[in-house]
Amino acid sequence: MRKIVVSVAPVAAGMPVDGDALAADLEICARKGASMVHLHCRRPDGSLTPDTTYMEECFEKILARADFVVQASTGGVSDMNIEERCRPLSYPKVETASLNAGSTNLGDAVYLNPFEDIEYCASEIYKHKVIPDVEVFDIGMIENIERMKGKIPMRLPVFYNLVFGHRGGMQPTVNSLIAFRSMVPADARWGVTHFGRDNWEFLAAALALGAETVRIGFEDSAYLAPGEQAQYNFQLVERLVDMIHAMGLENATPKEARAIMGTLK
Image 1 (cartoon, helix red, strand yellow):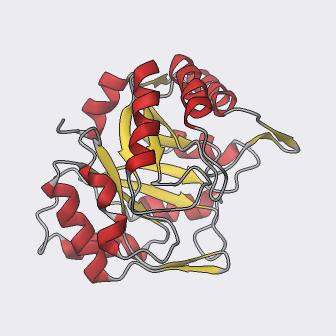
Image 2: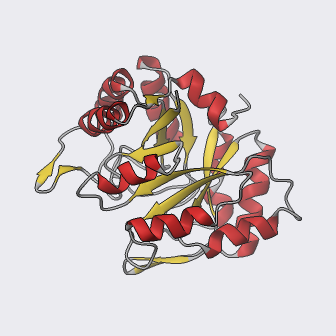
């Protein structure tokens, strides 16, 4: 039976981060079927920072309660340079990290990821024996990574996270998903993130088309249903896992998620 990695990105951009409350929420997320957790490097007030101290503290509190594949972000719209964005890779428990594959508009913000920065970030990810989760916001970004293979010895299979829903990027329609999926190389694996989600139809379509990871959580959307918002991330995980099971699939355990992602630690 096909296994799906349920990834949780539990912190909405700009919102305060309470490490104890976060760990309590994620402990239940793990019991409900999540196997990976994705965090940005933030201060307690929610602002992005190159100082990894509080991010590491949050991860330690989470891992004291539950086993998760640890995924650090190297992204987020900020004034940090790429060296500062890559500092979370130095946390020894990071197993996978986002690799942003190009520049795009994210609402009113411009998210800058020039080729030089992409190559630097990829090199740092591999230097730390971390597996990249390549975040792509439009089809051309897949080509960016394919062209980079000649400069950076990308470990195969490349794992793509197809991101939909940001204003200025690919929108969460079935036609967009089919087009995006058709450009993922045959030797690659893929999953999805649906930013701004207010229903579950698009995620169901992605699972039906072969997605192996699905990211859920307050970073992307708090909606349980149109007009109904979750109070905790574990409610979103429960809803997603119920849908996975209804489709005849299974949520992956952390051990199975590590095998799917090909983690090195």
